[in-house]
Length: 149
Image (cartoon, rainbow, N blue to C red; front, side):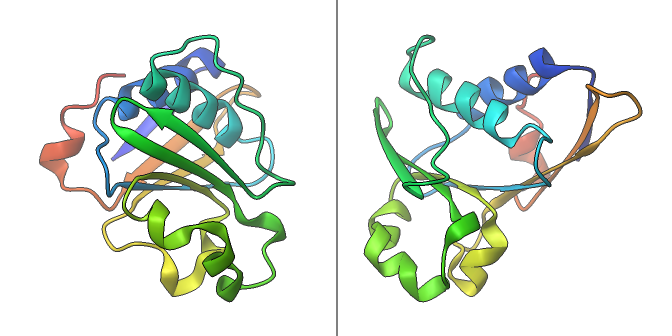
C-alpha cells in the first residue's frame, strides 16, 4: 500500500491510525532517511497508543531504547542508528520487546533479528517539501484495509 501525505498532520494521522491496529507481538519497522517523518510518526503513534495526547516522546537516538506503558501492554521504541551490531540487541530487552509492541527506527541494523511479520513503514520525499510518500508492506491487505487516513 502506498500513501501520499500532504504534510506533518497527515503523518501524525497515519501514526494515530496505525496505533489502533496494533496489538502485542506487532513490530513496525520505520524506514527512511533523516528528516522524512519517522520521529513525527512515532510520537503520534505512541501518544495514540497510550491515550495521552501530551505524552513527551523524545527521540531514542542516544539511549537507543525508550519504553512506554500502554493499555495494550508495553511498547518499545528503538532507534538502532548507533547500534554496534545485532548482538547488542540482547542487552536492550529485544526478546521482551518482541512480545510487546515495537517501533524500530533504522531496522536494517537488526538484520535477521527483526520479527517476522513486521510492518515496514517506508518514508520517502514527496513532490513538495512537506509531502511524503509512505509504503506499507508486511501485513495482510485485509488488516491494512482497516487503516483510516
